[in-house]
Length: 258
Ligand SMILES: [Zn+2]
Figure (cartoon, rainbow, N blue to C red):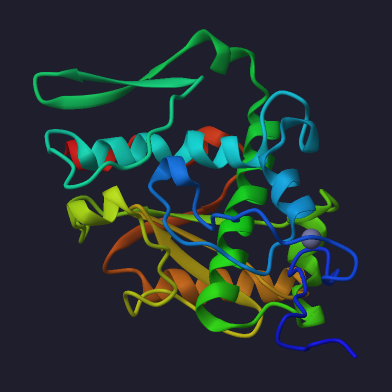
């Protein structure tokens, strides 16, 4: 007889302890972004997969694409302050922050020019789903239901494509604490402008808001969701766009310059 308490199942491949191991700690938010939490329902194979560049295109891993997007935003919030405790740091291969007269802008390294924007965006979206799904499972204890197969297919198995909405803030509307940049938190319902139903969800992370499907959907359902969501957010956000290039995300938070 198996001991059901020790019997684990991976939220990604759905394999259990009899087939896979669960030895390594799987950070839900990358450690180099200051992530502190683990998901114990991620097997070693799946954990390795997300961190390995061969899993995406041989150039960078899914996790690296995620870090490239958020480490600049995080640095932006941390600038000028002395962290209370030692937190992770990520060295970007694509970007650097440049400051002039108190204004910040994003410096782009030559390697970014040679990277495919579509590829990088796809890796980022898969990484965003990874972070969302592992935190969802950790915080809300859901994720094994078959409706989440669309997330597993795209994020873990690189099949199909899912639309991700990025919301552009109105200038000057941002609530943020420096401690959040040191050890970032993924919010599902921090502000009442974050939309949620059985098919679509939204998250806020390091000042950015994203919305995406979490269950099978039709084009019409997606469009309905998008218009309802934009209406809910009209006091705080200007617009929403489906991201297709990495540069569709305001990673340097230029909005803070204004
Ligand atoms: Zn697995």
